[in-house]
Length: 349
Image 1 (cartoon, rainbow, N blue to C red):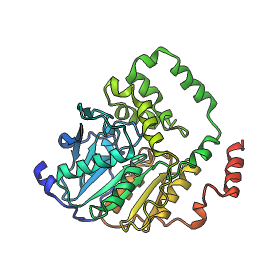
Image 2: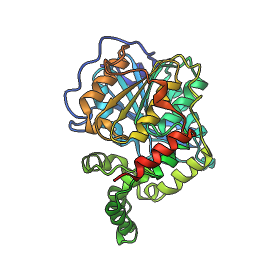
Image 3: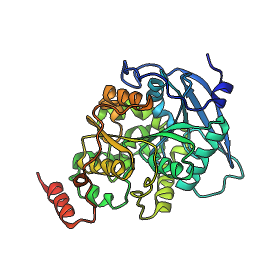
Image 4: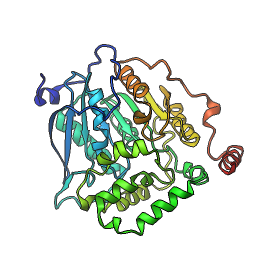
């Protein structure tokens, strides 16, 4: 069995065709083969390694305030063929800060920390699998270090452009669910950070929400796997990072990047399907794979399609259902006709 030191020396070598996922991610106990901390500037980032394959995959978590533990089930599945590294981002999860950690959180700082993870393991080349907000970090990383990245995956990525928030804000809301969560914010539950996180984390993805009870129950313990002090900072962390991004537009961030990009998106929310298609379309070699269910966590609602697609892609082949988006699928959110259609759709019964 390869040791951690061997993993630290390994380069990405694609071997064999990906095997099928035999169970839903999170239903089997993850097999951690190594764990420790990455020393980044002013911070210590805990990591876990799943699997002992010769090729290496680094996973970047989303939120942007989530503990990365919610990715462990998916990492365990990928670990059947690869060495998969999952780490907690700075001031999130169980990361630890030192006196030198004084900089404001930002996508740029998260980018620097990803490079610290790479340097810690001595990786010359590796694949990146990024979830939600992690897509911003991964897109910036592959532009800054194209020689390091072999293949790129975005799973349920955050919108590549801030203007998508306009469409999402105009969607019909579940008023009963909104009333329930508003009551929780006024209740004594907010004084118990972990219980409060478990009950409300699906709303932290606003202006969209994750209200599927299967997803909430499956991933809540991992997403909320943080000390109380970190859980109390979730809102501040999200605000600090997104405010720093301003009126973001990542549509051109992958232009000229030659690495293949696979975007995996759940089909439940059309606005976010359009968003995912835009990511894939603007990459020189990007394809979109639609899964059933959750737009944010499709590996829970459609585990076999997502895991098989990931294994196939990481083994060097496109999944059979992945396709290049058509230009008509990615009309700009500034297009008045598309805006009017979004408004009509959002106001329909």
